[in-house]
Length: 418
Ligand SMILES: [Zn+2]
Image (cartoon, rainbow, N blue to C red; front, side, top):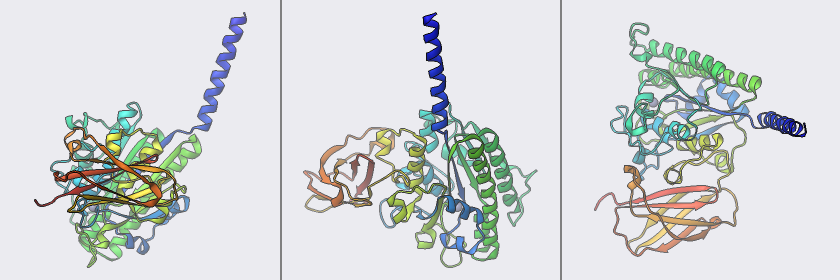
C-alpha cells in the first residue's frame, strides 16, 4: 500500500512536471523565405504591408550579399550562389556554387537542414519552391555526399510541368507557381507545422530581368508580399493556437544593377545591398548597428533551434547570430613580409574577456578532413587587435580563428599568386 502511494506520488509529480515543461518551453520552429532579386531600395517603391507587419513584430534589417568585395570571399550576386550562402552560412570560396548551373557544390560545408537532421533525425523538414534544383542540388537530397539527406516534405518542380503550367513569354506561369507554392506552404504549415521550412519564390526576379526598374517590378514585389503574408498568417495562427515559438525570416538573394534594375551578378552597391525581415525584436547590438549578411541567417537559426553545430563547422561559418549576444565581429587579418601577423576585429559591447587566436596552415576541411589549429596567443577582446610574429610563412593559405566564449570568428590569408 505504501509503495503504491509512493508510486502514485511519483507518477503525479512526473505528469505535472511534463505539463509544466510543455507550458514553459514552447516548441521552436523556423520558416525562412527567399524572394528572388529585390534590391533594398525597391522596398520603398512597393506596397509591402506584410513585410512591414514582420518589421513591426521584429525588424527589417539592411543586409548584404556578395562576401567581401575585392577580398578572398567575394561572391557573385547570382541567385543559386546567394541561396547557398544562406543555406551553408558561408561565402562562395567555401560552398563553391558560382552560378545557377550549380556545377560542383562543396558539400563539406553542411546546409542548415543537414545540421538540423544530424541532431534531430525525427524532427520534420519541408521545402516549398518554384525551383526544384534547390532541393536536388543545393540541399542535395539523396546524394552520397550529403549523407543521403531526405526532406520530410517537398513541394516543387512545377516549373517543369508544361501541361499544368504552360510557359509564356511574360512569366505568368511563374507568377502562378509562386502562388501555388505559397498556398501549399501555408496550408501545410497550418496543419503539420514542420520544424524547419524553406520557401522560395521567383516571380520578382523574372519581372526584374524583363522590365527593370518600374511599376511592373514594384507590383510584382507587392504580389510576393501578399504571398508572404499568407505564410505569416499561418505561423501566427500556429503560435496562437498551439503556443509554438516560430522564427520567421524573409530575405532576397541579390539586388539589381544600378543602371536599369534588370541585371545582377556584379559587385555594385545596388547588387550587393539587400534586406532581411525577421519577426523577433530581441536583436543583438551587432544586428542593430550593422549592415548584416545573408550568412548570418544560418547561425541565427541554429542558435534559435538549439542545434549544436560541431566545432569544426562553427570554425568555418562566415556569419554570426543576429539574436544571441555576440561581442566580436568582422575579423580581419594580414601577414606582412616580415611575418608579422595582425588580427583585428570589431566589438559590439565592452568586455573583459581574453579571446584566443588560433591559426592553421591547411584547409583540409574543404575535402572533408581535419585542420589542426595552433594557439598563437590571447588578447583582450575589447582591444580588437592582436599581433604576433610567425615562425614561417610557407603556406598558400592560413586560416585564422578568434575564439571567445560566445563562439568563433574566422578569416583567411591567401596568396592568390605565387
Ligand atoms: Zn536571383
